[in-house]
Structure formats: structure tokens, C-alpha cells
Image (cartoon, rainbow, N blue to C red; front, side):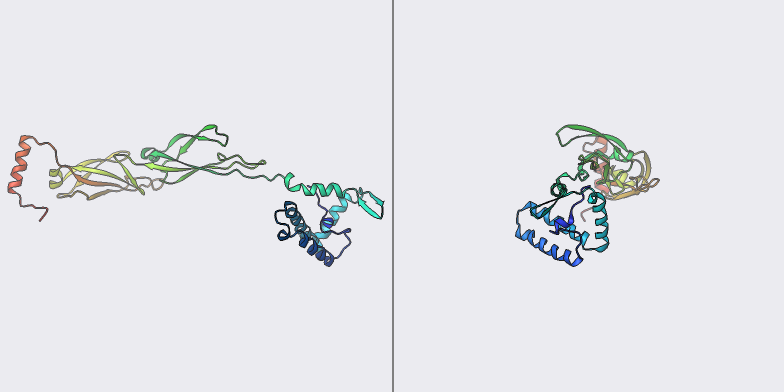
Length: 288
């Protein structure tokens, strides 16, 4: 660590000065190197930082005494002075001032690397059961690297996975940033995820819908038999508890079966006769 000569920074020749004298010296130095009077002068910007630092230390008696002890212990016994033309030159001041001037460029501050954000799309089944997935990313040098991501069972749509230290490289010994991966869950033809419920289509024949029946319905991990009441309509929903997506360790949402009554596109001759007879005897008119 470089010990700055705060008295010289404030334009003082000795440490035997009062707090009032320090305040006066500070005001004069701060006015001289004020940013408004030295626009674009980088040296002046660094100088005013040193001036403020020196004043904060020397304007408080306790911190001034502590600083004086540190200075004297480091330079007091080994400082040699030369007198010439009435000027006393401290042999160390030149070196110290040079070190102070370059301190900000020499001082290495550890800086954490930036986080990287990306997103991947996974199948609904992979999200339900959990899955390991490999993704390929490019680093700052354009080189590809493959990372294995463990997708936890029951992850939510839009949830992010954080991989510690897989982001951009830190500077000056700082830690690497993290990799944040947003998970998008993709629906399929059979199942649609909505919150913690899973929706599926329940296809019924006209006679099943009219008469009522019992049918097997596939959930994402098994099948279950449900009762279809008489006269059920397209668009109605049957909710099957605890057959949906994970909501906790041992709890799940519901499986929601959306009814769709499907009419056969081709009829046998016998079926055609039955439909014709039904049309003749039925008084039902859904448009009435």
C-alpha cells in the first residue's frame, strides 16, 4: 500500500499545523483543482480526489494523529534532507508523489464477471420428470463450450436456473459471473400446461355424449377411468384431481379433460339408416 503525503497534497510544508490551517489549505487546493475550472483535465480529476481524501483524514484530530504515527514510523527515521539555495528537499517526496499519481492505474480491484442470460425450450414430459440437457454457448473469444444442465423435476414454465461461475470471466482475480437459463416448457398435441393444471382433449362419439359412459383418460404418467354424464356438451370440462403438474413434493394440480364431440365422417349403411331414423323421430333442435 502506498502511503500518500497528505500535507504536501494540501500544499502544507509541515505536519505541525492546526485544524483551521488544514481547512484553509483544503479550500485553496480544492478551488484550484475544481472540476468546473479544469474541464477535461484527467490529472485535475485525480488531484481533487487526493485533496478530498487528504482533508477527510487530516481534518479529524484522531485520524490525523493516527496518520502522523504511520508516516513517522515509515519515513521519520530514514528521511534525509538536503539544504540548497534556502530550500529543504525531502528525498522521499518526489518518489511518493510519483507513486500517488499512478496509484489509480496500478491499484488492481477485483471485479466479478458479468452474468450471461439465455433460454432453452424443453418438452413438457422432460419438465415433469426432470432431465439433463446439454446446451452449447460461445465464450467471449467465440469458442464454443458445452454445458450440461440438470433440469429439476417439476420446474415451472419461465423459471430460471442459475449456474454459478459459468458466466463471463472476472477481472483481476474476481469471481466469474453466473449463467442464468430461462426454461420454456413446450406443449404437445396431447397435453397443455396451464399453471399447475394439465389440459387434454377428451374425444367422445355422439352416442357416448348423449347416453353417458365410462372412458379411460390418459394423464401424463398413467391413465384413469372417469364417468361421462348423459348429455355432456362439447367445450365442457371434467376436472380430475391430483393428476396434473407438480405443485410440491407430494402434491399435483389437476388434469382437465375438455370434451369434444366428434361426428364420424364416413358412415356404414346401417349407421346411416340409424341416423336417418333418429332424425325422423327426434324432436331435439339445438337451434331452437
